[in-house]
Image (cartoon, rainbow, N blue to C red; front, top):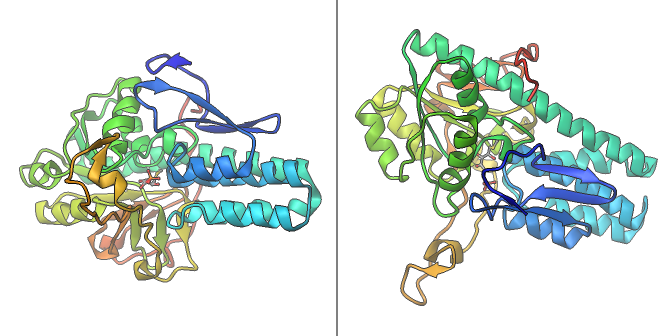
Length: 355
Ligand code: MRU
């Protein structure tokens, strides 16, 4: 086991000799623990308990999961079908999981090597997408705030931990930092599982970016007070009309951004856009049950028997979104655009280090 502040070249999720390896994100930032997973029930449980999380990362985990299923069960039969079915259904909101399971499952009859090749391709696509989103998003920030220093609010964890490397919304913040444009990052802690407080702060520390952590409730007030001039959020699914499902609390930040006149920008790869879902009302929102709300990291904070409502995501209607930045285009709902109307452009790959 390594200490959490030691640099690591390990990717969020990867494949090694019939084993899916992943950083156990439930243990960060206290411990950097790598899980070795060699059966499907353990992989499904790891996705459900958020050891691996974030829409692109669970897409990659799902793709490697199909490879693991073929490795264990061969190229057809009920056990294989069952394994693929439970993987695909492990979490319902992020479209990447079902998409990448379907994409790799379509190749199982061609054998493990071909499935694995596709899973690696998906991983590499997500890596390139992160670099490109960072560039598109930082260019858009220049357009929106001119020469002003960027003071960026963000929610959940949308960094390398949520993708393969660099991330989505956090990739834009990282690119702004690398360009010398970032004055302050303001992540909200993101109750109940504290992806902002535990993971985004860990990633911002590692990149040497200036930040202050906020409780969720401080976000709207600090926006109204002018503390941020840009808000960046990720997405678990972007519907065809531009409505966005993302971590619970995103809609509050979008409303507050509108109130404060601050651009609200969603950053997500093309793989998160779901043209088969017409609008946000058709997106299934994961209900994660009471336990993780009525207790915090194993300590009960509500009276015994108290029940909570715990939707893991919310929907931000497209009318509250200034721009949707993907790896291939910038969609401007504030200018009447939607995913239907903006054609795909080029990937931007100018980040010198690659990751
Ligand atoms: O429940 P999580 O932690 O998987 O939720 C993740 C998010 O909501 C992210 O904002 C989203 O997946 C985009 S991450 C690149």
